[in-house]
Length: 171
Image (tube, one colour):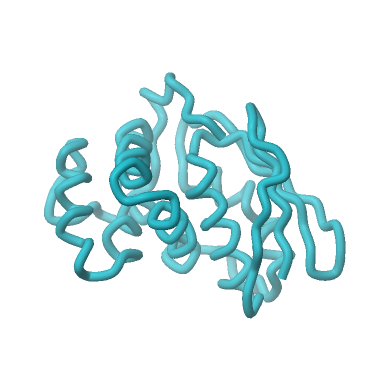
C-alpha cells in the first residue's frame, strides 16, 4: 500500500511504535530512538499505552526503508505481532490472521484502511490490505503474525500492490 497523505488526525498506540526499538538489534536501537525523536515521538522510548500521530510513525517507517532497506522494514513488521495484546485463545496462524481487522482497530484511532482475511487452503490465506502502512512492513507483519501463532516458517507473496494490496500467506 502506498502511504496516504491525509493521516494527520490518525493515531497509533505506543506499543506498535515501541517495536521500532524493541524489535531491532541493539546496535540499531539508538538510531531508531533518534529517528523517532526527529518526528517528535519522545525519548527515551514511546509509552505502550499512549497514542502517537500515525503520520509521524509512517514517516519513521519510510525513513527506515529509505536509509536501511526493505528487509530492515520487513523485520520491524515481523517483530510487531509479539509485542501486541492479542485476544486470548488464538492457537493457529489462521485464527491470528483472521483477527487482523480487530487488532488494527484496537491499535489505531481515526485511521483509514482495513485488513480482510480469506482462508484459501489448509496452510494458506489471502490478506487484503487498504491500510496506510508500507508494503514491506506489512509483508513482515503478516509473516510475524503467522509465526507468532504456530507457523514454523511463513512465506508472503505480494499478489497485487495498488490501492489495495493482496498478500498470499503460506506456511
